[in-house]
Length: 285
Image 1 (cartoon, rainbow, N blue to C red):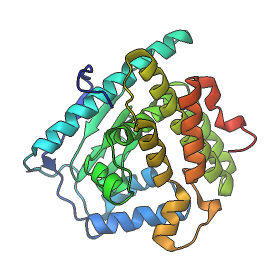
Image 2: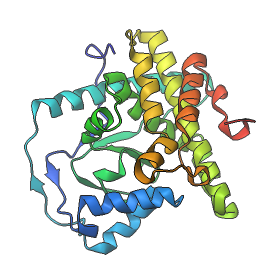
Image 3: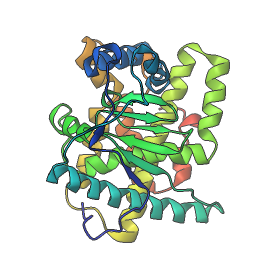
């Protein structure tokens, strides 16, 4: 991915190098177990964050400093460029639809973080909090993406950011609020189905960004598309469930299967059109 000459975003809040002392549920492993269980049961892992603070972590406690490596600094620079590119792309697209794009903030953290959606440890993975319009990511997730999920490459990393920014776009368009309202009314398996639709649309929006960014700034290199598709496939619910429990339970999906995630990312990538991403009215996901 051609990124080094790109503009750097000013909407970066770097909290790396400071760590909140964590004792909740026995530390990171305990949190990971809780999050996996939540996902398997069809719960929203972000909502679980609000409960974590009551298990012994004091988010107002003092911070412990930790040094940053050259690799850490390089990743932060890369993330800043990708975020800036999403800002430029979505600002142009919103103007096309007679709207104004409000830029999100991206928070880099190490280990644990406070958000308006609650206290989170890095095991939760990257997430978007609509309450403060911020994307949160512990860049150690990229190591997991490469080593655990076998999805290396800078464009795979960019896809992760673009997906979370896709949730911000949903928030600005009022889609997130509509989904949450419908989930409260319906409950049960339909809640999970709506969650899948929302996640797949964010994948599609990530593809829309890539299409328009490449058209305007020629950012894609040979192999980048394959990296993005591989990343989408690697974090499908079916693959994660098979890895964690040895079986697949589609009714508990919250993000979509590998095949679905790839298909919707590719749909946005091919079309570059927001209107192609209406997962909520699609006959087949």
